[in-house]
Amino acid sequence: MNHGKMELQEIIDRTVAAYAPLVKASSEAYWEGTTTGSATAFERYAEINRKIAELFSDSRTFGELRRIRESGSVTEPLMRRQLEELYNAFLSRQADKSLLNAIIDKETDLERKYAAFRADFRGSRINDNEVERLLRTSSDSAELRDVWEAHKAVGREVARDVLDVVRLRNRLADMLGFTNYHSMSLMLSGEKPREVELLMNEVDELSRDSFAAVKAELDEAMARRCGITREELRPWHYQGRFFQEAPDLYPVDFDKYYKGRDLERLTIDYYRSIGLDVEPMMRRSDLYPREGKNQHAFCIDMDGMGDVRVLCNLTDNERWMETMLHEFGHAAYSVGHDSNPDLPFLLREAAGIFTTEGVAMMFGRLSRNPEWMRLNLGISSEEAARIAPDCRRSARLSQLVQSRFMQVVYRFEKAMYADPEQNLNALWRSLVEKYQLLTYPEGRDEPDWAAKIHIALYPCYYHNYQMGELFASQMHHYIVEHITRSGDMAFDSYTGCPEVGRWLTENIFAPGKLYPWNEMISRATGEKLTAAWWANEVR
Image 1 (cartoon, rainbow, N blue to C red):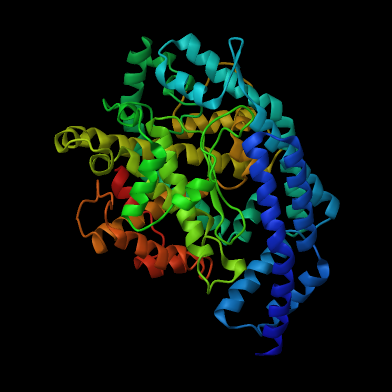
Image 2: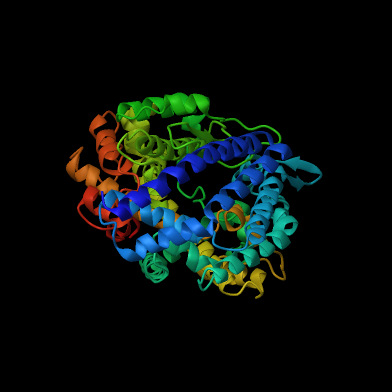
C-alpha cells in the first residue's frame, strides 16, 4: 500500500468512526420529530447536524484530503471513489461555523413549521389528505378556490424564512468559490449544471406539443365538470394543490380498486414476487396519519447498516398505493447497498440522487397498470382489457403533467438562487403559466412557491425527479427486452419474476456509489442515461 493510500485509509477510518454514530443519532431524532411533531426531537436533530457540520468543517483534514487528491497518488478505484466522496463532503462545509449552524437552525425551524401546518378551510383545520380529497372530488368552484387558497397559506407563514435560508445557502456557496448554491448543489452531487440544463431543455421540447394537446382536452373536461367556460379555469380546477399529478380525465376510477384493500400486504406480496423482501422495513415504518405527524411521505436509511424505514399517511386509494410502491422501491435500493459487505460505508448510497428516484418511480407507475392490477388485485382479464386503453392514456397524461411541473420547480430554483431579490411571486406565476399552461388568479401576489416544501427543505432536487423518470423508462425497457422478454412495453409489471429483483440488486442496488452514476447505468442497461425511451412513452 503506497503512502497516499495508507494516509487516506487512516482519514477514512477516523472520519467514519465519528460520522456513523452521528448519522444514526440524527436519523433517530428526525424520525421522532417527523412522526410526532416533537419540538424537542427537532432541536436534538439540529444539534446533531451541527456536530456533523463541525466534523466535516475541520480544515486540517480537508487540507490533507486536498493534498492527497492533487498528488494523484491514489489510483485504486474503490479508494478513489471514497476520496471524492469525502473531499466533496468536507468542501461543502469549509465555511464559517456560525453560517453552517445558522442554515441548520433555519432548516430545522422550517421542518417544524411545515409539519405543524394545517389548512384553515372555512373555520376548520384540515390536513393535506383532506385538501387533496376536496380538490379531487368537488366541482364547486368557490369551494375549490377556498381550499386551494387555504393550503397556499403555508407559503405566507414560511416565505420569509425560506428566503432567509436561500440567502444563507448562497453565502455558503460564495465562500466555497461557487457561483451560487444551485450550481454548487449540482456539482457536489456529481452533476454538471450545463448538462442538466440541456437535458431539461430536451425534455421540455419533447413534451411541449404533447402536453399542449392533452391540456386542451383536459381544459374541456374540467370546464364541463365544474359548469364553467374554459376561460374561467384557474389552478384550483385541476384536482391538486400544484397541478403536479394527473387529474381524472379518463373514465377509470382507480380508487375503487383500492377501497378496503390492505396496501401494506399488497406491497409486501408484490415485492416478494419479484425477489425483494420489504417486510422487515415495513415493520419498522410509520404508515398512518395522526395529528402532529409530517403529512408527506419519505424513505429514510437510518444508519447505512440496513435499518431502513418509510413514513406514509395511508388511506385506501390509488394515490397511496402508488406512494407505497414508490417508497418501498427506495427502501429496497437502500437495503440493497447497505447489505453489500464489500461496499465501504462512505459508498452506501445510491449512485446518483435520481437513480433511487428512478427505481421508486418505475414501481410507483404500477398502481395504474391493468396487468399489475389483474395479477395483484385480482381484477378479471376482461376488466383489465376494458380499462387498458384508458390506463395507457392516463399513464401518458401523468408523465406529461408531472414533467411540466418539474420544469417549473427546476427553473424557479435556478433563477431564485441566481437572484433571490427578484420578484419571486411573479417569477413563479410566469413559470406556471408558461410550462403548465395555467391561467393564474387575477391580481394574486402571494408566495405560492413557498407552499412547495421541496423548495425550502430539499433544495435543488426537483430536476432529479425528471432524470429519475428517464431512468425508470430506461430500466423498464431493459427489463422487458432482456429479463421478462414479454415484449409488453405498455403493461409488463414483472409480477412473479424474481430475476428482476436479482438484476436490480446485483446491477443497481448493491454497487451503491462504487461507480459514477452514468457508468453504473451503462453497466446495468448497456447505454448511458437517455431520454429516448421516456420520449416514446409520452409522444
